[in-house]
Length: 373
Image 1 (cartoon, helix red, strand yellow):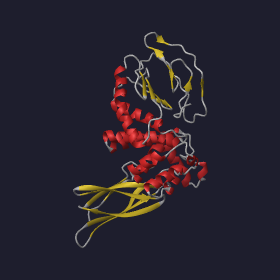
Image 2: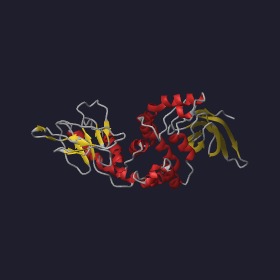
Image 3: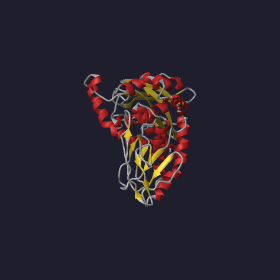
């Protein structure tokens, strides 16, 4: 098994990942396969055999079916921008090549194993091709035995790439799909905790889970929230320093310490709620507002947010006022309140808590209408 977790197979025409090669002139080649692997974690042993066309390209192997050449070209063209993006975020050389193999059925859901991606090339969507490549390139750049790091960062990178292509809302829409995947499970955790069920008997802590709903979807949100809290530069610095082979990675708090050091911020409370334990989700709402003016006529609003949930987070809130809006961030711990004041240049009209960058158990109570004085 190579560093990415792909299988190494002894076949006449093979590659890392279990792909059995073909000869496009004479048809499929029958090969004997002799494979072995050590513990593989989240990687599924996978073999693929088809009448593939396989154009050679540095660091990416594209195996397309006849008739899907245009889709393969889209992947080929998307590789350099995707690789540049991943290198900028992960700050290291790619650890071997990635492979993309075509599905005959265009409606088949994508499947991955290590740095091998199975996805239909019938479509020619350049955005989708780039995002798929970003995911696999992250696996190549940053191997890890921790599923929430290995898969969570890959899905986080997809969201960041969507932001680069279509803005923050496009990324949040992508994360919203992930939120739907674990929302019901986390609601059950919150309900159990309200009934005082012992913490160890409920939930799926990210640090120990092997449930892909958590280490893919919830972990993507956790990395996004960390990025919002410490900023791009600090998170990049922490990721650049992460080494799965480092003895420090044996410490469960290794990732936390890297990000705290880069971000110059205490994040123990956040990791305890979101990584080391599963305390469900937060539930924010506006508890109170107080618009006021200074003697010089400067307008302010004092806002108090309450978190009804068992997990804390730093959440954005937006104050809409006559002529514009302003967004601020505030840390609200579990079962607690936090108060801040905001200077405005017009009369406040409405407050909206959370732009959906923080997964919540209830999004129906996030808008507060401000009555006219």
